[in-house]
Length: 637
Image (cartoon, rainbow, N blue to C red):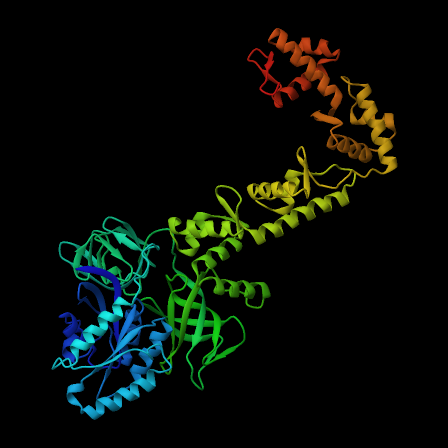
């Protein structure tokens, strides 16, 4: 028999026959607790495999009593469609209405209606209640759902109901299994010889026997020892399947409903979440900023405080962006569904989708924070949109594939096609093999680079350009990001590179006539004393300059490649450096080695200048110092 990773769930008012219906359908009694047997009502969730022709799917039976709404929410979280149960004698009742509201808020969109207990009412009553049900369901997602009158006692109508379920399941699309495995814990128990068993319905991904697994918020690690799917042994579990997973390393007393089983590296417990909330319609329904509520997501439930991102109150039927602070940290992911219920009187107020976990409370008074929260909420519903948002919102402007995968809760192999789509459409750029940047971010940063270079030209009009390293520091960009963006600017002929400097493409050094004359005077002094260059103090005296002007002129001559700094306070004219290099290399090609004393005589200079020049040539790899302190040819000779 083919297993399909689809789970159906029951819903409806207490004592409307949900458990009996499931028993007839599957042969399983989902009331397993002693209290349930004694009280004749479901307290805990019940799971059963359901065979529909050659398919096997899961069925979750949820309690109908108002005191167990939190359990109903836990069970309904993972279902793909609902068997909505209404008793013919009662018709629509309070929990019928609340269960339907909860199903709508949890995103359930398909189902069938089982009209039970028709054996104890007249045909006229069946007709009347069917009409009432159709009117009631008309504005809901079940408006077109078939209604099947049946009796779990006599079997009347059961064949038609069974065929309707087959049609329902045939039209359902199984959940994708390529996500990151995550299972909200429904129940835990211990089996002799195996140890702890955790049951529930995975909401994403798949896992195999032997996989390493984590339990949050407790932070426990373990390995899957065995798996049962639909009560049969299996080596794999997929999202959407009712499953029991054996993890022997865990003490079952330490595992509770609301915990989350997942893989390491993607999820962390959080007390703060950004959420999109839809309030139920209803006159008088008001949610105040700072209100205390019950928050349900997955199989977890905790008290929480709601903070509106805009305004101080929200009314029934409104959709609002909220951040919520939980009294107990829990694990939830983007697009997870949630429900909020008031504390007193206890009633369902609304629900919606989790946008993302937050590290701390957002300051809604800041327009840029609110704008980002709204952009985040709009991006999350689609994988491509959320991936693009995460790249655009990267704290350091550029980000890695691994960081995007962790934030979007996607595996790298499923993320890569989305990134490639964004690259192909020009919305994202691969800065390097490791880094990604959004095109809008890149354009803004390039404007910033150009602005820094332009500002430098304004301050230093005589300089040929801004040192690249200084520009990197001024922009605060990571070096690989800066280099990639600068390269684009150079290719677009907006900037040009001058050795280690950057300049605007149309920049020409603007010299003040007086400054230009002084520069020519200082340059001539160095050129005339080629291998016996003057000290800065000598320059001051010879050219009648003050210390500051001397330093500025020497700096500009270095920038324009007229002078070369060889040692502290020792500068040579560029022509002298080139001639010294030519003579040294020629000697080395002929003799194979060069003694410092020979170099001194070669230049007709003193040891004071010859040794620093040789050290300079060592540093730029024109020469290479041998163990005996002679020089050999370097790799850049």
